[in-house]
Length: 231
Image (cartoon, rainbow, N blue to C red):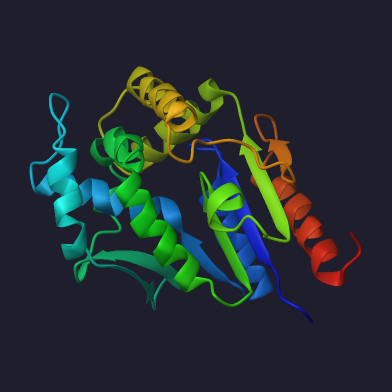
């Protein structure tokens, strides 16, 4: 059976990573969480005091890029790939609201995007890949056999993210999360380098009122059709 490349793009908190992981596990494909890569660089910038609400030393960050080593490692207990930054497991740290506030700003930097796109393309030199992000179908894998674009109302995306933080013990407010979601949408869609746009061939799915199982089965059927050459 032939293998394909599956690109899943879309707005923040639309469940890209959740459905991509599940799809990869079902198909026996490799899953690559590109958002985690940008989050790791945001964490690096925070820990090196290169970014805050009042400043961003982007040129200094670019100078430090050669010193940033990223890789994924499977957690044997959860069987999920976790992000390592310079040899340290930072999976939990990169999911914080603090890091989320700066991810889109980090992603605006062309040198950062170039570094990560090169790594992403290297990871996926062979077929059998599911990758999610903001520019996978437009920049990283413009020739992907299946391109999905996920969308949902910002209020619903904020509700999901708020519940996730509360369930993990974080002290946040819904208004904080909604503000973060809308700010990220604006930055992602208006940046000069590789803005978030739907690829021409992408199939857009709005999951505002769709549960995770229904969405998964819809995408799975689309993948099966591509793999079988039915479309």
